Image 1: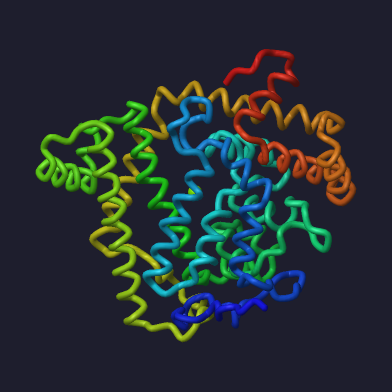
Image 2: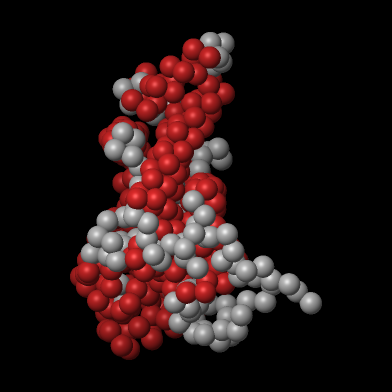
Length: 390
Ligand code: MG
């Protein structure tokens, strides 16, 4: 006999409660020994798209070094930050974790360069949005359950995965797309997962950027948040240098912004306080957020990384190579869908039967987006009869 704990016990009334969940698209019996949001998280961890994140780029291409973040380690770090904050605010930890682990499932190989290239390829076929693709992965593309397509996740997890959406796609998505048309918000766990992502990538990209040598401590001293913690660490541990000094600075920076996020959000919640998750959803602005003092500091860090790391000239050749590979793969499979593996070829036929060339292009984009960095490099080489290179 399994005694289940009440999954809503101890949560704030404005949290995503399982008792008021909008449920799954295909109703299922209770999850037995797990709560509904724990079941969502577990399905995400067991998905093939999640496993493939290990070989997808965060900033540096996967083969450039084993010490850099990948999409998988990034997703785990986002989940760690998200869970810590959720616990501190009496929000649902398993739901926050599920959203964080799934948020990048739709990412193409080669990070944002790959996404831009695929979006260009798909321009006349409805475009490619990586965030919408994450939803498509969990709703349609994962293929492992007898009774439904996708992972059949709860509305709350799907709501959190879909962070952005164009009006045209929002209209197509019904209830899930509603908030993008009416200026409403998702639940607090979704708002939190979005900021946990931003905190994780900005600090970890900074860490990887320093490790790569593409940015220096001297340059970073122009970023107020970094300079403050750099000074503090230097004053307290004057002998400390190298990676250990960087580690100490970065952990203090993360601790600083996470503490601010918790305190500011708790303050806003106390001032409101919302009656329920639906009251949170009906608000015109997010409730989870940084204080007026910290928001510009975090933005300054993100702006620095965009200008000095993501656009770094030493990554230029890699970016060009990655874009060439994605365009080459897309064109090759669109021109000759017989080259697709059987399952994807079948999907291309099904989608083409309903939407013609746009349907075929969507199936090709699904296949290419699902590739890991190294598989994309190998496939490009195989299709072009040349040795793998990027
Ligand atoms: Mg992310």
